[in-house]
Image (tube, rainbow, N blue to C red; front, side, top):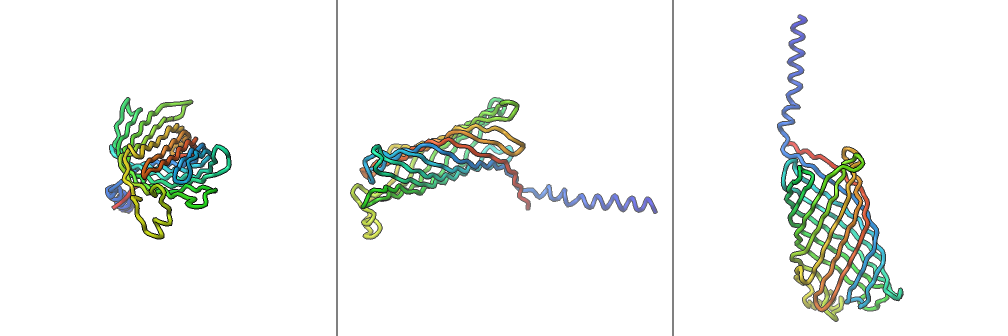
Amino acid sequence: MKNKHSIITIFALLFMAVPSAAQRDSIIDARISNVSQMIGFGTTDILDTYLSQEHFKGAGVTFLSTTERRKPGAAWSTLIEHQANLSLTNDRNDKANEIEGAYDFYWGKMHRWSLLDNKLQIQAGGMVNAGVGFIYNTVNGNNPAQARLHLNIMPTGTATYKFKMLGRNTAVRYEVQLPLIGLMFSPNYGQSYYEIFSRGNYDNNAVATTFISAPNIRQQLMLDVNLGKKLTMRVGYLGDYQQAKVNNLKQHVYSHRLMIGITKTFRMINYR
């Protein structure tokens, strides 16, 4: 009788183990996500000849969220970034102010190459960037604001070098985007927003752009210091230099930010 109970117990344990093995076989997708949340402060330089011929300089704040997803061992990854800016600037005589705000969304695919025994990783690919924003001049009576809308296709690249510093896993990461072609909104020289939206007078307000008419550049230089198994502190620099010369108008928004934040690593598993 005792042996009979032992056999029944063994079969019960084996039966209980079957679902866990089936569950492992049912895994159809596993992805690793690195999610970074950062905030930065720095300077902003604005020129918009539709509003004023003056240069405006001041301070600004930026929020940046970065998510990179990839399958273990895969060469391709997906990069998603959300960036929001707000700046308050004034002219040289401190008699006028301009307020600038913008939101940009970036989505792209990148291919990775590992070098130097996986210490150096190079990634290259392309991104789609959609942005919306405004510039508001506090002293203008007519046409006090300028809307900002654009859509860009941008080649992108990153380089990450991993090393040890004070016994901690550390990495230096550089990321850059450059515009190739795009589309942006702009009033024409001397055209009011009343003419565009109230009277419906279109005058080349959706303008095709290239790296010649809108030579933008966006770059990041970040230092990652590992604080735990899945938590990393990230500090560095974000430079976003947006400019365009269309419809006989010039515009640029140059921002320099010192950034600080954290990066977390998540592993997501999908089952059948």
